[in-house]
Image (cartoon, each protein chain N blue to C red):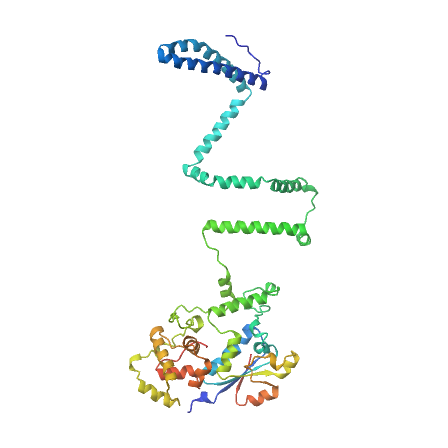
Length: 157
Length: 315
């Protein structure tokens, strides 16, 4: 088969844990798998929230300093606003029948996308392997990441 | 019959009362007369004339006295007041339609209730205290924005503010009820405001059979890829599909056929190739199984075998 997609690989780095920041990586990885492209995601820093059991269902949207936000920054900083905005967005996503972050992780795992967690970030956040979702394939270092992403296009989100 | 002529000054409450007592006495007399007339009437109709003859002078005397008394009252301004009162009544009648009166009748209980609750001692005391403050307004110091923030911490002010808000809320609810509009939760517009807008009026929305999970809508409603992809469903054959599948490295099994046939059926009904999310939700199939059946790009491979355009959507 001479289809160029058969040899194509993408490697996404998910470094942020906001609802709006995590979804691009998840959707892109899933779309890659759907298109027959090999995909992996490397979760680091706050991106680890997406694969942390206690946090994956509580991803928030940050409205502060977001010029595209319909909410004025003065208001967006008030207590509970983040939570409120996240609820609005989650409701809208549910309305559209979009999978939740947890479902997305399961979907990606089932679709054959490899999920990795950053070892250094986990130490910083005082996380252990058991704190992560079972779909995570391994905990790796930055060096391991380069070994695994040979021949892949790397996308940082 | 003689009557005394009192001056304006000595018409007092007592004298008016005397007049009424006198009238009353005479009325009693009249009543006796009328009773006698009734009796007489049965005997002789002409007796009526007797009565008139007898009572005539009495009535005249009464009239004379009454006229004088009324004149005194008039000079005291009673009638001017009465006339004005009549005028008020007239204006009320003119300005009020029968319909208004009917409505008033319907609401009279509510009005009475309101009046009752407004005139409760507690409420009156509250109003009284509020008015006291207004009377002593010159002693209240002026207060600016900062002062407002400062007093906002006081328990009394906070309580009062809470009460005001509660009243305001009720007023708002009543006003909304008056408009007859149902209260919108305000949730959806805000959700739409915060979330990305993805209007897809042309997206097909087909409900699956009762047993199947709900069909994806919105972003997951598979949008047709484009007019150039319009396919002729009739020209597709099973044999051809097997060949196409073989060229893609897939040996067709019952599981494969189930998906391909669902996709063709769905395309015929909805006008779009179902995407992976739709296939897995509607058929209740795990994503893993789908990838096991069509390892490379399941959606597209499945569509190619089924002779359908590439599925749309991100999922």
